[in-house]
Amino acid sequence: MKTQRRVLLSLLWIQICWLSVQMKVEQSPGVLTLQEGRNSSLICNYSISIRSVQWFQQNPDGRLISLFYIASGMQQKGRLKSTINSKERYSQLYIRDSQPGDSATYFCAVE
Image (cartoon, rainbow, N blue to C red; front, side):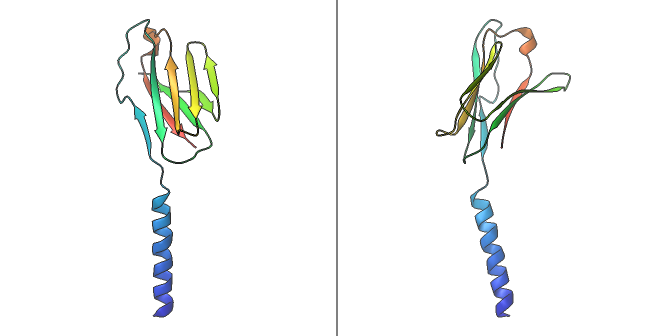
């Protein structure tokens, strides 16, 4: 009985510890409407320290494209730029001079 209680308490402690380190990731704004030629940005906030952030674009046809894999600093590809601020726990995706081909769903993933 005593051993069973220790095992249950240990499992409960492990479960509580696991719950306390679960990550929360939020992207804002939730919906973004761009006008052609305008600049805009999306922000990905996360709740615990991470290794990297990936930004993806999913086109209306469902095709998924990896835009950036960023662990520090800034990366730029044409009109798109991504930055990461590990201390403040966020990454930002900038879209400069938006074009009709930019119409898609954008999202971030953290590692």
